[in-house]
Image 1 (cartoon, one colour):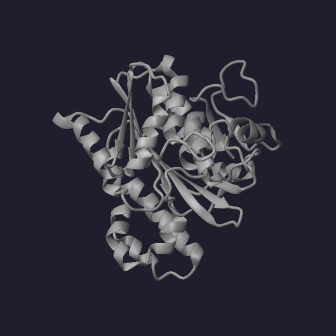
Image 2 (image 1 turned 135 degrees about the vertical axis):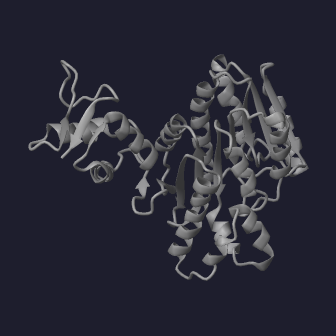
Image 3 (image 1 turned 90 degrees about the vertical axis):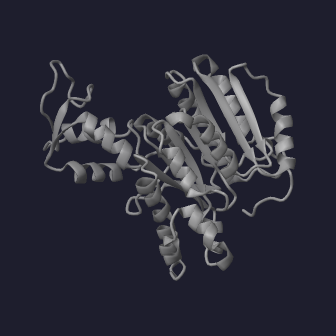
Length: 368
């Protein structure tokens, strides 16, 4: 999608999907961190837009505020919202839309109009980290139309703090189309945080270009930003072409669980295909019925002829596969234990345990 030139525009199907994921995730993220000891809880929308679409649909800033309002009884700290919008006409429209929402006194809303994402977020991070202080728990939704104005150094700086997360839209179609332009060299180097992207220009195979650009950004999040957990999710349109990737990075396993929950609950309309794209060898399509054969294969490969705990298995499922913590016990472990011959043997089952159940993370099992 080309960047719109009007103040408001139509809500595209691929944007609707992002917003559904964002809403579901915030509904889980806010209560979790809202019970913590921090004085502030921060939400940043790096490319906020006007707050409303042409047919009256809510924009991402409104969705975030509504998610927080639904959970306000579970929020102890002050909630800070930063909505960054470079274009003044859209920022003015956003202020009008937000004025219609009644907010509690603990909610602070700042529309950073006329500022770039880099300017506004750098100023905010500087203000909160003076004197060796840490950034409060922060979720940054970074949703540009292209690749400019999203320096990886700033993404990495946000992720350097322990309770901070980012959800980045990687606009593959636009990046792939313009990556060879000489006047964009500095912009792409800033976006990727390295000049290694230039190695992709000579690749003629579109699938290879796609994967290498994806893998470079994934590598940067893991190794330069040092995010403990990173997953990527691919949106393919009805022509089976990649529109974009969503990269989610966090240092919190519970956050990853909740993001996966949001992804698996995406309502598919038939206008797109949405999948976990983190591992090119195991692309998993989100749908009503998970591809349990893939998960079983991954578990057997990882734990074959080993003794481990249910807790270790769950951590592997959440952090290293596309699947959720709800997917592996009943549909994978239980049949492996109850089949003849057994493929999974409990080592230290508690008294009166029912076969095929795994009530405690310390329960040890052996894969055969």
